[in-house]
Length: 548
Image: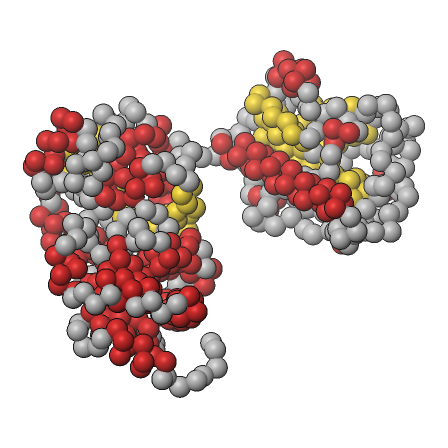
């Protein structure tokens, strides 16, 4: 660690007050000079790297005890707080950024005096004082660096205690004292989040393989509403990439290729010209680097068995189909490899609260890509992520899939409550109970509770149960209004997966010995063994028990 110099500007610092609280220090150091603080890069963090991606900033704290401050977490490479521009020029001006760039520092970015930049060996970043000492309210000073060439948990923090006037109150403890103080706390927290976001993106940019840039062709199997929406999303992400849309309907195929419109599902949307529809699986799969599976669950296995000869054993599949296969009680991550006769077929599942029409309209959406292979989940993230779609990654394939399947059955129940006009209290109670039942079964199957509370669980349940665009909810509304299931299904041009999934869910519940009263009632209604009215009476007469 570099020596600390005494001077007029920083008279409080001494070599004994500078300490490292990180498990590992990167080949960078800070030194204090008469009118500046300097960060110097001394070497490469690894033999395979010829740069350091450094994020540095300064934060003033009112706590004098370094040990009381939270340690860096694995998920938080660093934290930047405070308003550096009020004390140091740093990189807070365009002129200063130009100076950095001309010195060989690439990709410099700046926010409130924090700097995230690629720093070559021998280069330095200098934070220059504006002619006045540190804020007297601050009782400590921290400087941060981080590198993408080591794990985030090894991000380096150097802390230097500032022996100034101690403030008797912290910003948070005094947050209720005035609107101005509360506003400052909120603003500071938001600015810290923005700085963390920019620095994280910069540090990970060089680590990631640009899957989208390298991909020349993908195939989407299934030209329904969601398959079409996925094809459009990919085609918009990269105009030079061919998106082959494999469908069965020859007239629809002709319409898409000639008029660039899917007249059956999106008659008012013009499809990108790099979407090429085909009914020929050999043509569709030839040279394709990824396959997006968007067929209804109950028809998937039979179709995949017919096209196995055209599918490479190493071709990654991304399934966006939600549900359980009735005959086997399996999810798509199991159905696809089995149907293709290849247990090692690479597969990820993509799920979350998403209506196809809103993806077509480029409305903000967030989903989850789950795979047991982290590399494959990351590939899905890079391929699908766009300015209007966020893709989180997960290794919990079971949790993502089972939540996506069971929420369709719960949505039918929510629709029945709506159709019977049973009120908001009943709706809240039923959906809450249904969420508990989904959690009970999913956890017995090995799902993580955090997954069930996330986008693919709670997020998808909220969307499907409470929004009128939901096909499964619409089925429930019509059942609750007195229509027969056969009439409802015959009038629909899309599949409501919850209808077929309900029976499979109850079979799974028996297998894992889980009581699921709400979802069982839905299955009995769909089997015409129980009327909606009778189901409500029976559910309300169940024993009053302790909530679990």
